[in-house]
Image 1 (cartoon, rainbow over the protein chains, first blue to last red):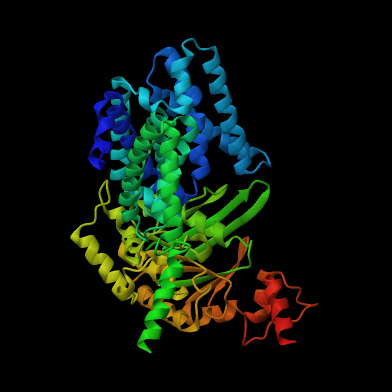
Image 2 (cartoon, each protein chain N blue to C red):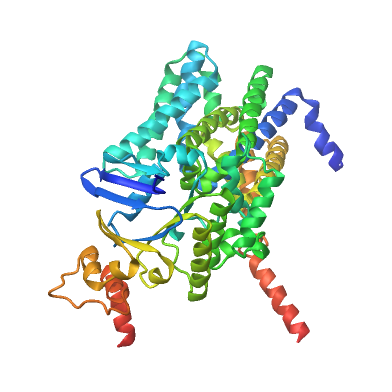
Length: 291
Length: 272
């Protein structure tokens, strides 16, 4: 069996095609968003919001509303609660985040346990890549395209917000509104990624690609290309691996992204642990040869 | 009668129980350079925030060229140079990217740069002598160049009022002279400049006037008068009777030791 067959064989199954398309879409949107999250230092916030949307999604399922709506409402509740606990007690922010998101996540689990037709909802927790239906795919497509478009159109404002919110304020923009926009997009993106890797692992898709790209370039505009490309390639590779190794697909996607991060962490020519040393050695050699 | 460029009237600000500004008043005319002097916690940052409209005073009001700060901000008139600690120098942006952020207020929904924007950025970079470093990542500049990059952002913005937070911290003597010259040129062009600092050495050469702040404005006048040791003593809380006063020709020396006991101690140890 040559490489061509290896790549083509899974595509004979409709569910594999749907899995690959959905994952690539989710991977791209998450990766673009992750560029801002890692630079602002919102990784923990990404973790929190992606978990905290669970009760919202379950309630939306129960009343038959769009998942995204429930997710947005609970993302808002989570962020508000975190702010309230932080500002009105001596509890620090990381503790406030930890308290709020785990509580909301637990509430989601309880809601799932009392909701009939549990099987569907359990998929939200660990993802169900291979069981993506056509309506699921359409939902991911619509939400993904909406989130992606807003992120790209407002990328310069969001970068300004991440870099220097005071300047944003000084020139008449509203840092508060930009922060809220980013949080809303985070909630929306979480819903997109729920389908693929599930609530528990969404945060990986929301952090690893941005962190990887950050180690490769000194230009934000390039991060916005590098992160989604790496993320999409890794996700597809992860699905193929899970197909041939017969492993959990969502988790395999995350592992592949982590492997890419590890390689970059070690060998990035600018920032890598080994890469920078190799470059130094080469320079030394060049100097020695010249002498 | 023309309005003052910056008018602060009886501004009082509390952070919870803590009184940060106590009926502070300040009037600054256009095209003047004013040094805001006070120790940490004297309310310098709070006053900046009030002028930019980032905090709403509990009492009093702020006017920029006779208008409320929100209007001045929308018009793009207020430029801000942050202190070094407030900037993420690892952020993946080039010097040109940062200066371009000065143009965002003039641009459309997606902040797409026009030819005029690019020309304004080139001009600003040229003015602060950073053209050759335009492509560098912002953290790969020297202390003084970093400050100039942010001043260039204000120039590209077309700011008529510029607020600089500790512009001389971590800046070597030569860069300090360059920044001083640059700010004087800007003032000559009509820009009003307010500088918060506790580095008193640079003030007399740079400023037209100085303000002593200790939750309220204790004094406002020519720098050589305001920086007299007996006046500084008030602002920095020195006990005039029991402690040594700073040398008149080195106005900052005694003060800085007082304000940063650690530095003072290490200096003494170093000498011993």
